[in-house]
Picture 1 (tube, rainbow, N blue to C red):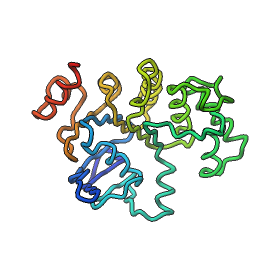
Picture 2: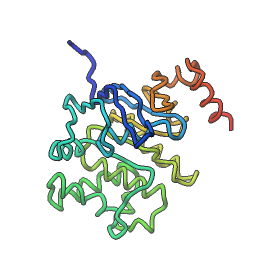
Picture 3: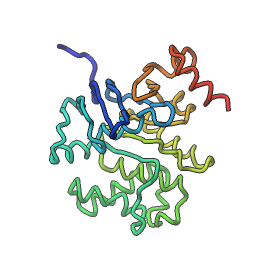
Picture 4: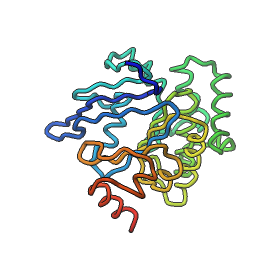
Length: 249
């Protein structure tokens, strides 16, 4: 089988049950290297569960996931190696409160990547510049706005030189005036060619940054198309209903 496309993420027939709850009902998806995929859908549709299965924060009930050609087995050593290649940014920023912004961005580099303090610090400063807050290097999280904290979290993920960035509703905990500063950073990353899978309610971001948009409902991918196709010509009633509810309020 010759596959011309460079698929960095391949998900095949992914099922995830929590007790009787079927969070994922046989999801299959491929993501090409350098593409930005935005995942939308109602609460409880399986979006975050799918994202968390990609780096095995959730262990799939069944199905296969390949990251850059390597099948995830769940073996601890392999998981650590693969997780080091995948940056994840959550709804809540998960910064260490007792560490400065700079220290938050250097810690994993030293522990996981084995970088010296000097190298980790230099890379951390590069990434804080990248997300637009180098002047906050010595600030503790409590002194930062939500938008700034989320940008530190993005810098922390980027400092590991990931091949893939996963974003799980990165703006949903932010006040409205801070959403744009975080989306702008994500937009920059998209333009730089980072492979990104983003669960988001921000339709403007989906329109402007996504190469592909996925609509999920009931643990399934209902529609997988371009932003244009999804917003202008949705194929499924469920998609149309969802869009009418979110775009018109």
